[in-house]
Image: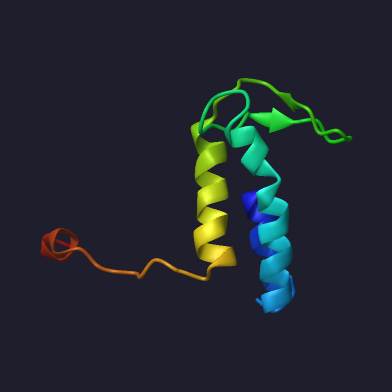
Length: 92
């Protein structure tokens, strides 16, 4: 879902309406977060309605992608690129 939301918002010019639509789609996962595994999202969902969760009940990268898409795409908070002083100290 994360890469889809990123692409959708980008294709629609990062508009407010695109971000609201993405937020609406993400809200469908609220039920899942309190259903199978508390605070978790299932590994995969069936493609046809009712989009029943299948696979394992808790998948860390599924939760992480929903969080990333919410923060970076819906709320437009991007991580800053920073160079670590440790990396700068490494020989070339």
